[in-house]
Image (tube, rainbow, N blue to C red; front, side, top):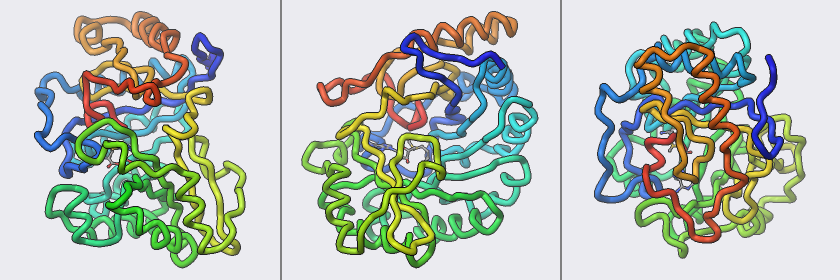
Length: 328
Ligand code: SAM
């Protein structure tokens, strides 16, 4: 491994791969109410193509992969991809971000294929709100069961991602936080990013410092070492709690200067920053027969072009794609 770094000397070792733009939920903060155009199936990378890109990336210095979407578990045969990626020697951590609705039935197979960990997005513990936030009549119990099955089969630590929205689910902050004490959950509260739909408007925003203040009703939050993750969250613990409370602050305290990630979209574009439209196409070169050296050159170019930081605070919102295509 040579080690990969961008033009600001940030080490880059993490690739998030979106395997589909399809999702079985329609979360209000992620997708606009009118929906989005879907990428045609033949434009979506095959598992073999994903593997080829991941192998080239690993030879450059990528050693962590996260599978995301859309909803990655709606794509059939995902354990086969996990198994292929797990065979790449330099990759030592494969994780998954999912809405959890389909997790219960495949967690064991994913674990066996080589998946290490899972993050489950869950914004409410109430069924009626689950329907409001996800815009579909899906069953919250299925997600809760998925979380328990994932923990039981050892996809640990299972982390929960909760986007906090004023007037929608911010009154559940304490309920989620209490689960870190009673159930040992690892809950990460995410600041709402203004990228889509009615959930993305400024009045819904709750800063992490405001969330923290409200959580103090449950006890004093003690800072923990970042051993639970190497991503952007800052972790805390209530005294004697087995689980942790994390805060992800893309707005109030962006973490771009520590960003170590690249993203591969479902249609094969390498995107250095979630919140910038800049991408380099890998799919066409791949389908025209580019060799591994050529692929690595394109990957290195995209890394070199990684922007220093996002500009959400200045009002810049990426225009070309919804999160469901990039893999939020
Ligand atoms: N379907 C999977 C899931 O639900 O986890 C993976 C894709 S989803 C786009 C990935 C993550 O992006 C989720 O944790 C979701 O909460 C987060 N996300 C999407 N839109 C967001 C927004 N406007 N602000 C903050 N987080 C957002």
